Length: 451
Image (cartoon, rainbow, N blue to C red; front, side):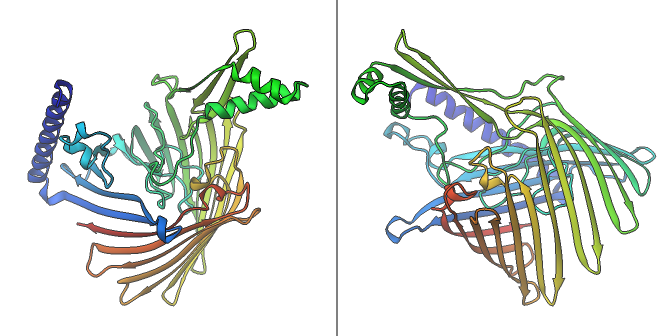
């Protein structure tokens, strides 16, 4: 092990020891308010018997502490530990590095304090926290405060807490006003390359073939076009930038909400960013120097989202509708409307949920210009005193017929413990929403324990 590797290993050991000391301190002094959530899941992709492979394997542990709580004050500290099931070894020189055998990521999940009744009807919170807006199930067009977490490929509504300031004022019980400010931008997290990956930069030979086609379109014969193109020096690079951490670039917004009769209604305005970058290819050709420079410029577009939602219950049927219209500063991403409406109903031990979505869907974001109509549906049945759950869920691209199907069986033998076995199947025609995912046919196994 060289000196640099030794230093890294010692720093890692020190960080781990310090982290364990903090956990021990929190556990001792907040034992009565300790929460833990253990989850482990494995995906087996089985397109063919001779090519079956593990595509996703991860264990996550969330440890939460509520150190100080009272009628007018609340606080929470939560850390998330993620262990990857795949070693990251690339050389025999790394066989003495334990962190590469079992990669572990430790992230701060939530860390905030909240004050109640600062003034009559006024609450205030600051720190790393989750704020949720919207009434729809899983997809919320108005919920653009904290970044999505798509790292678990079958959890579509997961969010990562963000550093923000939040205040809520309710002068009367049926009217509320919320204001939020987020000084630091955080991007969405995407699934690992082992589960799904699309190369964002083109290969050099692909660009050279484009040059040849361009020369031929100018009237040059094929052989000459190939000869000229072979003399070109081609460079490919990526220009990626996050939004600046300045006050002018911060995200902020507000929402007013009310309840009247049997309706919950809210209207919101939020100034922020898309959580996934928008890519713009820039190609520069210099015929005199025989060079072609390709740069993929990736930026997070600035946007203003005007939104609203409504929810009610009629004759035992839950009904909701939610919409958000995004106005972009840049002309490249077009202004867009995202709309979702749905209903759910429980009867004779069954639960059903049906929604219509106009707009982007997480797993269909491989096409940044996609704008589809989807129908999402779920049918559940609980048996044996709710210890067994059978679920059939799916999504259909209405226009082009591509689909995703997600069956699940969940067994809960004791309180807090559950075992899952499920499936994940996608299919679609050319240029449909789920065409890039059509090779994904998986069985997954999971266990979770909360206390």
